[in-house]
Every structure is written in structure tokens, then in C-alpha cells.
Image (cartoon, rainbow, N blue to C red; front, side):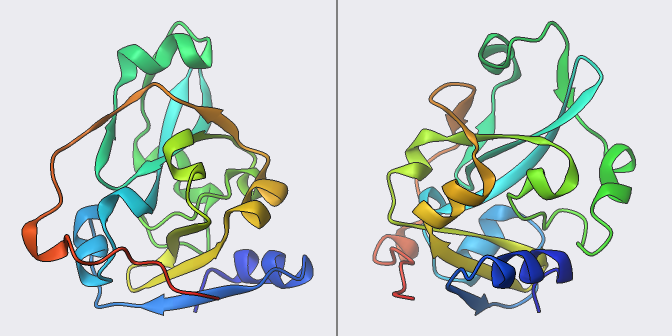
Length: 172
């Protein structure tokens, strides 16, 4: 079941969404493979500390944050990955590392990779190690109002050969 406050928020806003169950996995790459979704189409959330404030960047699972390139995009002088200890209390209903990209529900600005915004649907962790949520990107954008960014992240590498035939897009 998705994180309680996320499910309540989506339901209260009458958003159609699908849940996708997968075997428990702990990295974005493992989740993508388990759910048969290419890493380019799975959104992962990363928490950063920018000049002492926490913020969320959402990027494809097949990418990593590039702090040096992201710093001027955000407009900060100090930028680093946050430790789980810094933010775990803000996400009481979520398993560590399975954060949904709704930083606005947790008092954080959300920066969203524009390459993910090109897809009709957005797929992301539902707050658990074994479940994803998939919903229309238009609904996500309306509810979160993320800042779209085109820099600050880099591709990690190609999708494994056995995943190339999967796009991971399911109709809601």
C-alpha cells in the first residue's frame, strides 16, 4: 500500500493512479529491473542539502546527480547529498530510499528532470520497497508544481539488454 499521506492526497485530489507491485528492491536500478521499467522512465527522488535547506531532486533511475552542475541551477553556494538522518523524520510513512517525488507534502521544494516530463506518465516509488505508483504527468505537475531542470544530472549508462524491450508504460 502506498504511503498513507500520499494515497490520501491523491485520492482527495481525485487523481487516477495505478500501483505496480514488484519484488522488494532497494536501489532504483533494481526496482526498474524488477518492475520491468527502463531506468529512463522510472523517477527516483534524491534529497539534497542546499545552503542548509533540504530539497528534493527527481531524476530518472538511470541517472545520478551532478552536484557541481546542479549548484548554479538551484542558485546555492553549498550543495551536498543529505544523510538519511537529516530527513527521515519528514517521511514518517515511507521506507528509507523509497521516497515518492512529492517533496511539497514534506515541506521541500521539488526540482524535476525535464526528460521525465516528456513522458505522458510518471512512475515512482510509493513509499515502500515493493510498490510503485504510476499516474499522468499532467496530474503530477499540477499537484507538485516542480521546477523543471535540464542540467544537474548525468546518465549512468545503458539499460541492460534484457530490459530494452520494456518501456514500462501501462495505461491507467
